[in-house]
Image 1: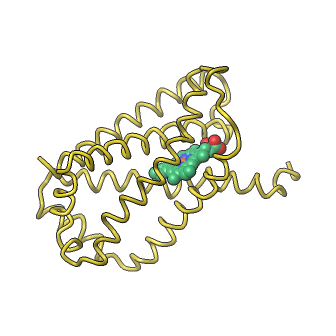
Image 2 (image 1 turned 90 degrees about the horizontal axis):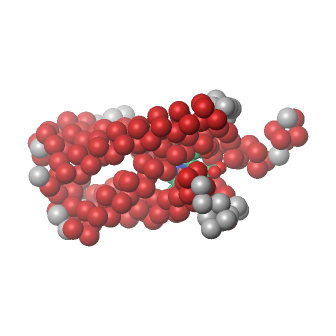
Length: 210
Ligand code: HEM
């Protein structure tokens, strides 16, 4: 045990796993819940969601230390993990081996999606004050393009499958779900949670364009 704690890869892997849940996973859930309020219309969304957030004290510090840096660490070390291990789907075509592969593929896809998403929203708002002042109309315009809507739909689905399967693997790697029965049950719970979050996220997307 001592030897594994002294191994920097062991510690980095634990930190990578922990950051996937907190704060990255928790932020994703909060973000979907906030955006699901788009269905209450432009005035409500701009004032009660966006402006309320922008009025928060120490917002830039929170954005950097509680959101950006943990995501960058998780993504950066995720890329290191991606280079190790092979799924060998043709030799082991089992469900969880497919998810092992999906976890890695989705990690890479989410990274590209996040760069596009943050660029089109947060950074665009810095250069263009009109975007920051009326984020609802900006999102409405963006999501009216079928290709951008599709991009968001895919980004949402992959992020949630990554989180859902990640929660399941966390249960195993942190020694919470040890028996095959517990792992079967927790897989069902994690996928149910994924589906629930997908419905919340989807209604957020549709709320901007309906
Ligand atoms: C929405 C953003 C993300 C969330 C909520 C998230 C969450 C998680 C969670 C909870 C795990 C499980 C950790 C474990 O098995 O112990 C995980 C694993 C993983 N994540 Fe992410 N992640 C996100 C983005 C990314 C990105 C951008 C990458 C970039 C490559 C990435 C790469 C990985 C990899 C490779 C694993 C598997 C680790 C392993 O099998 O040991 N993730 N993620």
